[in-house]
Length: 246
Image (tube, rainbow, N blue to C red):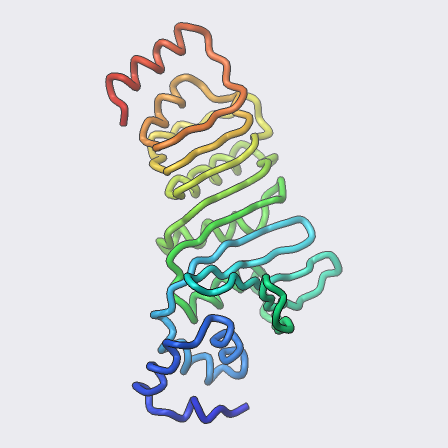
């Protein structure tokens, strides 16, 4: 497919691309590899935030951009379908289907695809699977590329303690971390002093120790559910926070 637009000089094309929204850009870059290379040279100034959502029967990546409607790339995994659908959340336009034929993991493939085209300012995660899943691999990849991590939400981490520790270490740079509980009742994690997030929420933190609560002093806000300490431990926490609030 040929577009007269793409035959313009680079400077003129750059000025026009500036005014394209991300849906229009995604449509253009699907037409051919040549078009993708050409367009990607001029779209790095398009700043977006993305949210990776990993569910049992579906996965999606949402594109968030100021003054534009949220756009979703979604894949239905229930039937093993390889099709990704570009959807507007407002359901105004007919969804564009994108056939994903590459062999790399689906969520990571979409994130890499978007990184070719846009400047990703922040990546957030919502994980609704309880076991080790694609989203954790994507989180690891984003951290390795020094991308800013926004909110990370994991309903239940039911895997091994080793996996849970890896997840927490990967999430330490997030602005917000929220998870319900861990499978282990005697979970040990010695790196809470590295957490400096705006908000940490653990709905069921029965496993947490007084020393770990003290180590969380650098977080701006902490919500811990089902925590019960005897008076000496409570006194120790209060004394430590008064002496060094973080």
